[in-house]
Amino acid sequence: MSAQHDVVSQIDDIVDYFRVYRCEPELTVPVPAFEDGQPPLTVGIAALGGGALGSAYANNGWIYAVHLDGDLVASGADLRSGGIARTHLQMAAVLAVYLADTAEVQPFAGQADRLSLWAYDLEAGEGDIELDARHLRWHLPAAGTTEATR
Image 1 (spheres, rainbow, N blue to C red):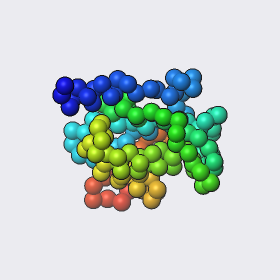
Image 2 (cartoon, rainbow, N blue to C red):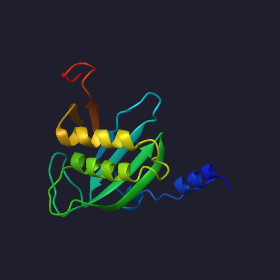
Image 3 (cartoon, rainbow, N blue to C red):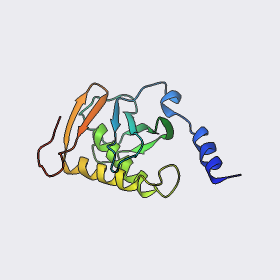
Image 4 (cartoon, helix red, strand yellow):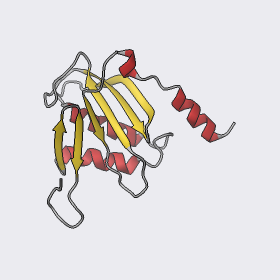
């Protein structure tokens, strides 16, 4: 059996926790490509029990689903905010840091820098963040400028 078959088999075995909990992501965040040719990468997240975008929740559980090139590659309900109140976007960044640290494991191989830099930019407040219902549009400054573009 080939390594590629093993990865495809692992992806097929992933449980979509949004289906388990019979809910939808409260926020879906596209992670910008770091290099040319990187596939689309999105993180969907919701506070367990429901939450309001922009509100921060401490000691809360979170449901997430990560799609790479349209395929569900990670999902869970094991993400916790602990004693620090965090928003949906901040928890998406926490998840991205974790995924970047495990990026040597398929299917996140080659995505570590992308996830790490995106999480860092979120925490540093760089780029232009625009919430629109459940979707987030992320605009980074154009090369050589300090202004965010829309």
